[in-house]
Image 1 (cartoon, rainbow, N blue to C red):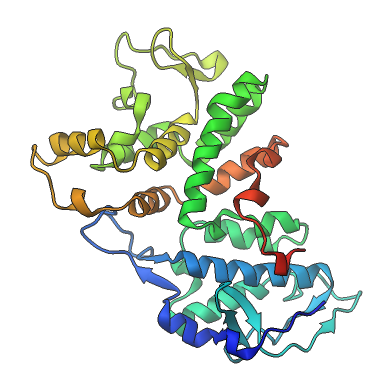
Image 2 (image 1 turned 45 degrees about the vertical axis):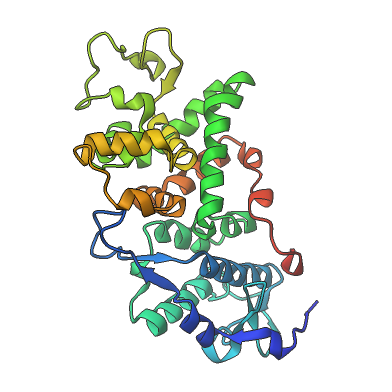
Length: 341
């Protein structure tokens, strides 16, 4: 069913991006202190949502064997005011031929990537490589003819900063607490091990220790020094693939450093103790003006920039263990009812 929206309720895509750049330069002299040459931009939440609704429509059309080829042009695209949803100004649908080769069809493979390339070239004169690192995972998912609708729509690339934060807290609650109390300790350790493939515990610790704020989010993992245990603090247990960090303490599975760090950062981003500790450790007791002005959103973006693949690897870990439903992604990021498929 096609739903018509009066033109007065839609903003042409070009005008939308003039008011809200598709991506903005990461500000200097703030929390993100080291930037890679090809990662100078960050995406605004409003635009994540617009692009997400575009992907939903592409995926919906694909599932119905409807071709949108030629319709995703700037002249034919707009954004529904108030809903921040991508829409087509003119709609002339054609149905894909059953004999169409799905492996090479733009509908099946590269339509969204082509759309993103068009947007970035027009708005920023840059290529799709300027997107954060999780772009590779996103487009690999979309190019796989066997991918499920759920895999594409709930890719972590489309989470707003607040949704990302909520997911980090939810992952920690499940992996570090609930699953252990529900006889799913093996699955919990497996999810952490999956994360350790992307971000080794020691790399996480060393990276955080080199940043004036992230170093305060390590919690018990700060007990690691140069990759070796502090005498008397904990003993490695290779046979169980776990590290008891302190005597008579909770066991911390391999791969749990980032799970804990992300939760602490999202939950305790602006607190008196944190700011005092930063002053003592990094600013010689003098309160830097930055500490009076930074926002929680900046902290979340710092975490996201430093560990861009964390959320997606966590989702894949839960999926591998058959526990993706525990994350409640349909509640975390519900599909707008007007697009509900």
